[in-house]
Image (cartoon, rainbow over all chains, first blue to last red; front, side, top):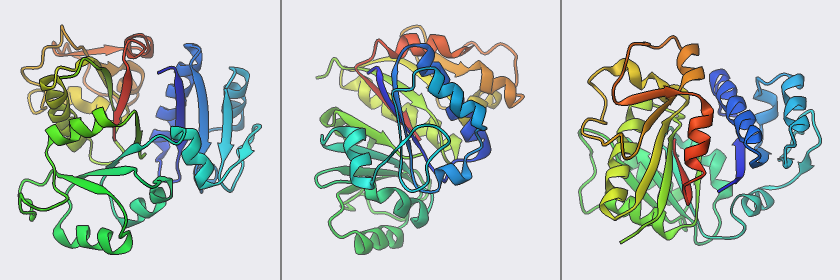
Length: 179
Length: 110
């Protein structure tokens, strides 16, 4: 519980960067083992100043890792496979995604390993689900549809309810939330 | 049945109204399985939940058993309403950190 791995993504907004910084500093104040993983494009879109990065390093950040561009502190270059290993130590992982669009999905999908499960919640119609199935034929994914007028039949294979979502959480020791 | 203890952080990356709604339904499902929710923490855009008055999804929630915490720093930054909210506790990060340390698992609802 006290080992925290924070993913920093290109998709984060300016206010989101502020929120993540406050969270990072708070974890360090509580002597949590905090690791940062800068996903592709994160450093380029980062709103943290160099001084803020350095403050994290001074507060005993346990580790910093990056895919592609390095942040302005000591950081280890890694690839997606290594990022997945750091995040879940090879344990089957439940990925949580609040649906945005296919670009968002494509950005995060490389973190999904064999036997992982993706849960997507949001307003997805049948054509979007079909598109995901076509692009990622081996992907194990479930959908919790939040639309008030879902165009998904209750017997749709991917469609699950909150009890099943809770069961998935219970079955996975690692739950990775996509920013 | 489960006796797992969960800390739930509502930290949206998209429509926060949906995030808080889904978090409530998931928490209800976890409780129905016998799990314990040590706290629910509203963070990022979800700190705006205090501005909703009655239009949130946490009515009937036992906040004595599982407190509903709202990050005070982000709440102030976003100029949210500061009047008294009986269900939600606007608090610093330390309260959340202390409670989340009691949990077996942290689940972040995006």
